[in-house]
Amino acid sequence: MKLYKKHILVIGFLLGLTVGLSAQNIISVRPVEIDDVLVNPGIGFTTFQMFNGDNLQPNIDVLANPDITVYEREDKNLENKGYPMTSIAYFRILWQFIEPARGEYRWDFIDNLLRIAHERGQTLMLRIAPYKGRPGTDVPGWYRSMVGTNRQFAHHKWVVDPEDPRYIEYFGKMIRSMGERYDGHPDLESVDVSIVGWAGEGGGTELLSHETMKKLMDAYLEAFKKTPLIILLQGKESNLYAASGANVGWRQDCLGDLDFWAAEQNGWTHMYDYYPQSIINNQMEDAWKKAPVVFEVCGDMLRWKNRQGYGEKEVNYIIEQSLKWHISSFNNKSSQIPEEWWPMVNKWLNKMGYRFVLRKFSYPESCKNGGKLVFTSWWENKGVAPCYKDYLLAIRLKNRERDQILITNANIRNWLPGDNLYDDAVFIPYDLNPGDYLLQIGIIDPMTSIPKIALAIRGKEPDGWYSLGKIKIRKTE
Image (cartoon, rainbow, N blue to C red; front, side):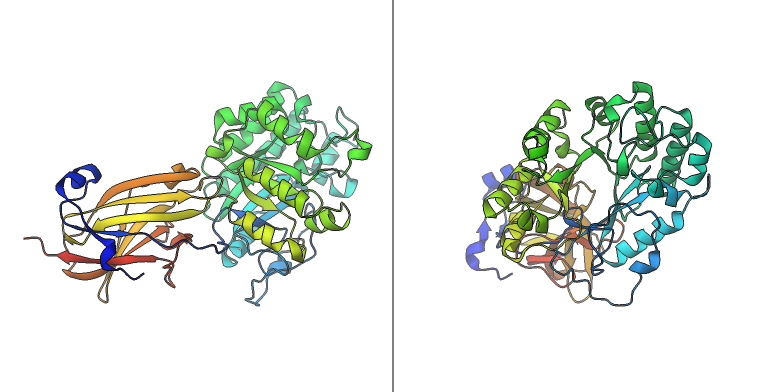
């Protein structure tokens, strides 16, 4: 970024006291905002039962007998045809596949999903569903043999009795084993809590006894202390119990249901009669401040157009409502987006989750090695949610001889939508040679020190850092 004289401000003693900068020449940079769609961690559309670049058959619901070789390929083209690039791959898999024999788990498959997600620039959002509705997508065969053939219970979406202590024991043990292996894995985006109902979507949760609900929830709450948990809006008691034990996000199916089955359901729809009521009644309206809100499409966007007859007015209404509910990610089942809706989708992507704009950054024209680099900054989060991961705000000083990364104490998880001020000071190492350096800023991965979050400003370098200006390092006398 070019710096002109008008951007170099001399700050007097009085102002120096108020902002913590000494009475010397201060460089103030006001980056230029951009409108580009940014593919950032944990937000935006997700691929579903596939990864970036796969372009497989969309809308596959729950994987019962997956083959990892379907996703192994040498082609490096990650383009999603008619679909946005994504940072999340959402998979849901049946218990019968993960535990084909009692106590024997197919973690090799999950290991490979995590590896491939990493290779495709994504993280894995995962649900292990206890069963689907048909005999071929049942509970594991060994468990069916144990409990018998009865499939008629208190709720029509239960195929085994969740009050049976064996269900709590064996399904819960599988979840705990998964947590022991994967909790905190850097490529595991979140775990979708699944305890009962077809595809684990919670049907009949409100009918569970308190003790059974608690034990099934505890399997997740105790196993996943680091990886975020996402719960369905199914049953006030279960939502309140989960939220009392952890910062849990929530997800819901059927975003876009304005009239899908209204004629058969006395006018009832998800968008008008379920979402707002459940969010408030289940006391989840502020959950977004600590954990993500995730939606899944009703049908898909092609159906919205071709079968439901939605136009721009309806789609904009759906988008606006999702943003009001602080959506971070959206599963459109990897189904193509109608061409004329792309402008609306791109605007949606630019508000979904977080979007950081650095409005102003001020720092001294020079510093001594061994001394402090004091700075002030003003950030705007133009999205509708914070970032939920512990990425680090860092400054890099770089010249031809060396680059030095200086970590700040910023907690970007607290940068809610709107303005965020962050002022700090970082120490310059004594062994940093005097000279002229380029001052750069980035939000980096704590494991790799590589910039992880793209900012909505100009000045991005090929390695992901943003150049703000020059600084002179002087020798400590």
